[in-house]
Length: 169
Length: 385
Image: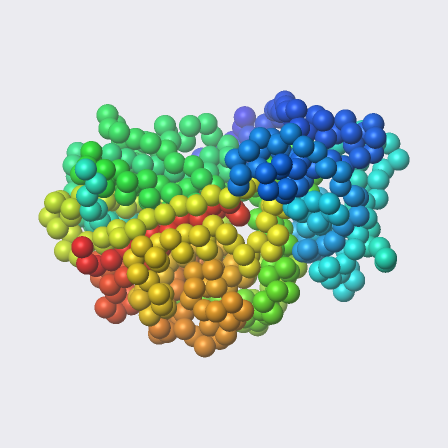
């Protein structure tokens, strides 16, 4: 912990009667260990071992949730049924991001620009928010079809998908 | 045991990008003292305290403990409320329940945020590490996605959104507490500002502010004693939805939480024509486009007519229903305080103490809070018991 030198620098040259105000800068490197629970565990096992995307399906209303989850909030029923979902889907919303937001996995700014979209994968009632290969706005439209481009090594997490590519069908 | 309650006093700090001269507790103390002065009360008169903020943004454990004494909670009932961006408006509702319960007569609510202490965007990206964390792009990224969807389904334009941004910043010039004061704001200036995430320009977004806001509730028998024109709570409601951004297809156009809150609260109060029946609305619009979507969801216009509503000036200061005379969230956003500010500014209009931003003859005010895509709060205030 140290007094932020920049702030001290800024304080210089101000009116003499203005009190120099204290500010500290702290960097924290903390490890958090989240458990995925039984649904994400099963989901990524099928993803890694069988290359399948599984949603959870409410047996009461038939809604298929991605990511899978333990209950259908609307019916308040525990979900035990699974449904296979395609890696192809339809873009419901898109954007190109120009602001370099911090990537929470690295703590560093994410390179810009990048395209991202809400994609309704075939077989799901919800959408997935993910990167697009394309970052040219003029090539994007709502309703366009996309497919996941997978990395060569499948590790069992969401970033096994590099991005979604626009496809013609 | 339930009884009527009213907002009898308000107090807020001058919101700005960086309060180097005050820490979190000092800002809370400042807002709470101003509210007490407004009602000529002393802290010993207050029976219960509600506080709120977004603690992850500042990275400090138990902020409610550190700010409690500034909020006047020493040896009193104190609770902290947390519902994301609605935390402030939910604290406002919790304060109402506390005063209306019959258990406490005078209740202080204080919300604050000190964005300059921490990492708002980083805090916003701490989503589910098994799912959406790698792509999380803070509030502007989330909104941008929903906005392209909304524009496609409703045909609103970047110019119409920019008009919302201009209205807010012009109104803010009348509010000495507002963060952004941009006297030369124009639609062109908004459209020429840096693109953050298509189609959101920098000036379409709210700022990050340091600030605190306090309100005081009184039960029916005490309200008149301390306030000439109490702002009576006629109804309050909150609704929650499912957690993932991707759960909500066509989110802005369908915004279930706001539509459900409006439906229930309007039915309860017999509101059939909100533009005519409300005199002022203070709504939570973190981005210009959201205000257009909220107009539709709150029934201020027909579906798809929001762009026309802003063009026709219906929601400007001299329009039929001025929306956000304060300058709104687009001009001032200390998140934990923003929902409290909506209620405070709504109450000020009924108290007749809104200064240059006062709308004449205000009787009924709609107050609204919005949290990510999952929460909505609404409250209706009235000059009549």
